[in-house]
Image (cartoon, rainbow, N blue to C red; front, side, top):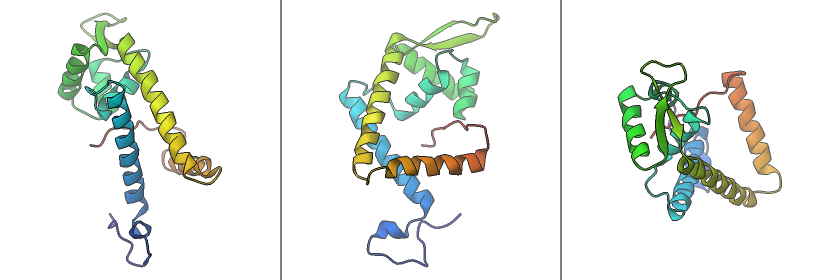
Length: 165
C-alpha cells in the first residue's frame, strides 16, 4: 500500500501530492460530512451514515437480519442491534417472512421511506453544489471515469457499497 504522498511530485498545493485513493477518501468524507449536517438539520439527528447504508441494503423488498449482515459486511449480532435501534425509532418493522419458518423480514416503515426520499434529495443537492465548483461537464466526466474504473475492477457485477468507518 502506498503512502499518501507521492515522493516524485512537488506542487504548490499539498493536495497535488496525495495519492488518488487518499483524494477519493477525503472527497467521500467531505461529502458525507455535508450530507450528515443537512440530514441533522432536517430532523434525522438520530441516524448515522451506516443507517442509510442499511436502508439501501434492505430496499423495498425487505431483508432478513442475516441478509442485511451479509450485504453490509457485518456480524449478525451487529445487524440485529442496528435493526433493534432503527425499529425502536420507527424506521423499520419486522414481519413474518413469506417463506414461513422462524425467519423474520425487516421492512422500511413510512418514516424509513421518508428518510430515503429526503436523503436522496440532499445528496442530489450536495452533488449539484460540487458540480457548480467545476467547469461545465467535468462532474459528468468524473462520474463516467469512475464508472469505467469500477467496471474494470468489478466487471458486470455492481459491488455493494459497504460502510468502512
